[in-house]
Amino acid sequence: MAGLDTDTIAAVATARGNGPVGIIRLSGPDALSIALTLSESELTPRYAHYRCFLDNEGQTIDSGLAIYFPGPNSFTGEDVVEIQGHGGHVVLQTLLSRCIDLGARQARPGEFSERSFINGKIDLLQAEAIADLIAAETETAAKLATASLSGVFSSLVDELSQQLNELRALTEASIDFPEEDIDVLERHFVISRLRECNATIERLLNDVAASQKKTQHYSAVLIGAPNAGKSSLLNALARDDIAIVTDVPGTTRDTLKQSIKAGSVVLDLVDTAGIRQSDDVVEQEGVKRAKSSTHSADLVLHIIDDNEPQDINTEWLPDSAIRIHVKNKIDISGRQAGKLDTQDDGVCVAVSAKVGDGIEELIKSIEEALLVQGASDSQFSARQRHVDALNEANRALSESLLAFEHHTAAELLAEDLKRAQTAIDSLTGQVASDDILGLIFSSFCIGK
Image (cartoon, rainbow, N blue to C red; front, side, top):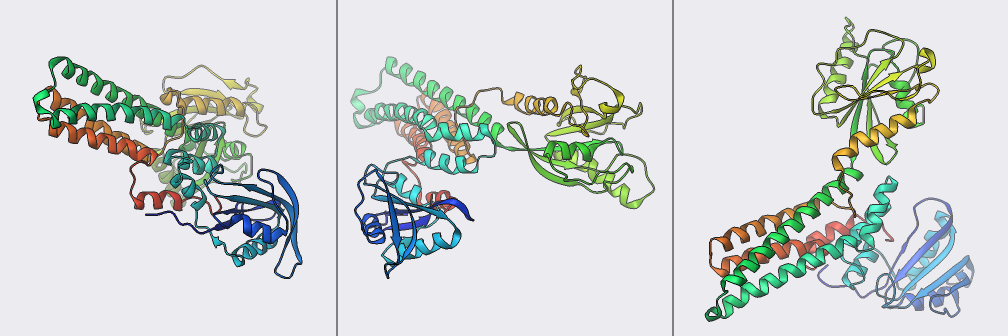
């Protein structure tokens, strides 16, 4: 990663498997000449041309569209050609092999985005947003990634970096020209700006936390008495027959895990054995696992048979987990579906897992319960790397502020400010090691 490769790379840019359309992407100095040899015809920049793509004997491999994007006005900043043909695996691999025979190299994972970053077309935050957009599991996650890709996060970071740069310039000037020592007015100005930068970072950290809250997987556990309808509710939320459902109490004896999308959140949902006293060793172990699974849960869904007056004792539930009480089987009890009066320890929703009544209201309650703690409206997608960099900058600025208030030598203040700016600039990639860049881009898809 120390320098930009100048060879031409090629890769399949569409998902693995058969589909109606498949794309081969070329980038580099020989992209156009390879495409011209492949199609034996000229390509007008930014026009979609219908062409036949030929092998080395002039036989047609496939036919489709070829589009030429001259550098530097392309995604990578280099000459780029996209060949759009039929989406069969064999035909795409044949086209890719032909491009490699003509002088291209198989691209590494993320190498197109890497070249875009190195050529200044995108920064590191935007590059990561591309991967986040591809991996988005909910509409909310996709919107946040799109915002980051458009530069929302980057502009906030650049503004903060500029403020730090101005402070460093003022501090380093006092080192270079000690006879012009910073006067009282300037000292107050610097302290004020340091506090402003600290406050800006705190706001960014809050936004990052809200973003992570909206895109993370939440663990949720279904608990209740045997035959309360836990497995039926799992199937209703998953919209699939994941768990075995019978009228026999105790059908579920072990935990069953399934990731599901519940509105704008992703749940790692755990179905558990019914909670009751039993002499059966296997069932006892199932109950033990059910109780254990709640200790690491973000959410506990307490399922209650609306037709049974007796319910399980829930005093053993951890206080840390959010609770939603779900009165099930209202198709038998006749209760109206939807949210009921909130109980002291959580929301209560009436549903019929069997026929689907009240499920949408339950999903809405799950969203509200999990996202209420992230009430801040996040503007962009974020990763743990961003949290670490912001925290490092925050620590450095706090030390800068303390040092300046105690009239510490300007050299030490300048060093703290440099630390803060290095951490902030690492976000956009202005300062980043080859190891970090390699780790980020290697997680991308081949062809992106």
